[in-house]
Length: 438
Image 1 (cartoon, rainbow, N blue to C red):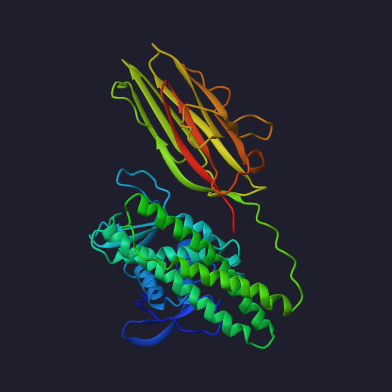
Image 2 (cartoon, rainbow, N blue to C red):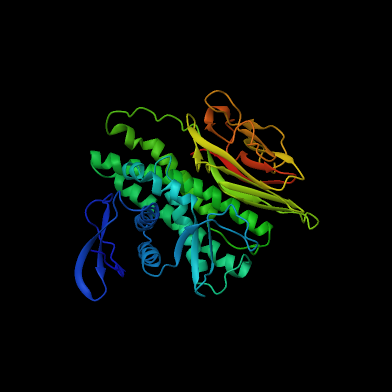
């Protein structure tokens, strides 16, 4: 039976990692268990973890509102963040007027891979090295300030209150962990104390990382005049409290004294994460004989002259959101050609390869081809000629092999390009950024 859940009551069910929360349904006082289990969608799991983290950090009302806005009001959703020209932006979230005339929040769909796809891992260690929950929960706090604004814009009138709230919230969260640490330190030795201190140490690391992100964001927004200068911030107080706690953890060594030493975790080697996509299918006004269309997984080109019409469609498997060391993903490439008339003939090529992030389809600097099982490169030639199929192959399977890619420093970028040439170049570019966990 499906229930339209209206009022979400965050009650302590005795297990902070429980897969459900208690809910009520409007005037009906009967309570139902709202199961969010392994069959839930990636979006539901992500919303659940965001709300759970907000609740953990004392933002109970905001956690409830997030759930209601996602499930009931439909004013929270996931998708690509685009600017006013429809170009994909590298942003965590965006707030503004929706199609129904009311404000909505769009969270970057990359949250789904960071959180929804890691549900089992987060259940064991919610705030461990691979978790981004604290950072993403701070994004929720920030965007809800914009949610309550009229026509939010990237200007001081709107950004000043949003960043002041982020700054104040970060300071409050640090104070909360500080109070919990002082209380936990006085607990008698037990597994519960060890678990509590371990969790607090994990959260402290995430808050320290968020402090650096917030400080840099405020600096950049002041520089680009999105924020008013000379405002008072709590960043220095927040940093001082974090440093004192880090020293306290080291001084008292509570975790190390309460049981057998755990083997040190292996350092995360880092990974490539998809951060933006862009289509290239624009033509000059004079190219009246051509038409181009490019999207993720498909590129097509058309050329016509008198009675001759040549059409080419290249398809490819869209690449994964993340590429980690040891990964090897199959990518299927294919080219289909149709033509009418026999007055003209032409040829072209379709290729998929990695290169520098600034490269656009039709150019190369340091290309790295994908390879097939027999070492063949991800490159297909084709011919517009009556009765002649594309050569050498109309379709092929190649692989994105992580070991052929560089491993960069944090923030480094590479591009995966799908490029179709038929007298003019069209293509699609995926930008990957090297990520490392603190």
